[in-house]
Length: 99
Image (cartoon, rainbow, N blue to C red):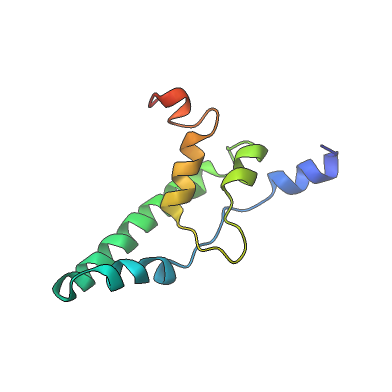
């Protein structure tokens, strides 16, 4: 990788995910009496995952960031990004064993 591309890859900020659009489906798929709680639970889980992704993003390898970054036009979530980071070499679940 050329030094300029490496510098750009290293400076890539953590992905930004729209929590409202991600958690809308949790609300829509819940029973009417559970919709508010399903949405709030989704937002809470996503916020916790966002904090962890932000901590780990710049420490992840360039290859891991390229693999786990959301694709344009395809909805993703912080939970999915965090799971992807965990599955990368050196991630928390590398070789199937939690660290």
